Length: 280
Image (cartoon, rainbow, N blue to C red; front, top):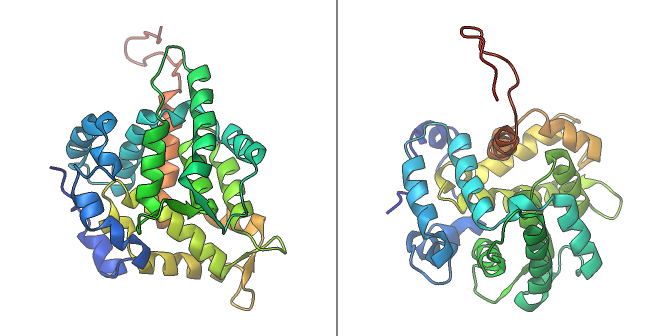
């Protein structure tokens, strides 16, 4: 059984306290601790091997790398690494989803997920098994703590975009557009909702001890809005991206996740300085 206690997390707990996000409560009880629960992704037959990989990753000391590797395993299992985030956004636009802060039901999510899975199949070199049911199960596990079969549109789109392939900059711009107000700026309330939804993603892979503290969101709000002055309560897109470039701790898992994806496709053409052999 995978332990939910993260190695080396005592320093983080001491810095950010022991208060857990209210919205993460459901992720700290039976919905994650009971891995055989049919309502969670970890009870799904397609991800049984992922739990064993998680257990091996628990020895890693750095939480951002540990979390990124876990999310990469889930991403690959759901085949979302084969679909660019911009294509996912295009599919959602063509579907005509409700406004971001309204709810979307399972029946409304399924056509979008099915289209994304079809794109993954077309982009694959070999025949792959559709993972539409796996993606839907994970999204409901993340946000549907009351088991009503519905989540907010913004939550649905956030997960698909973040877990897709593509540039991190494109994803951050899309998130800003999703959570911004009618005047085109991001308020503290919108920023708080954005960060809360984002942090549910690392918490879903048993990293709530690191990324599941309410003070983490409060700290992010203070740091981000402090850079523009306390007299201003709204962020422009450039100001939001400027804060993100500082690699805040609350987003450390996301930046590492993208570096990990990029490194897997990098090719080193330099020859060895000792033997002179170059990669073939």
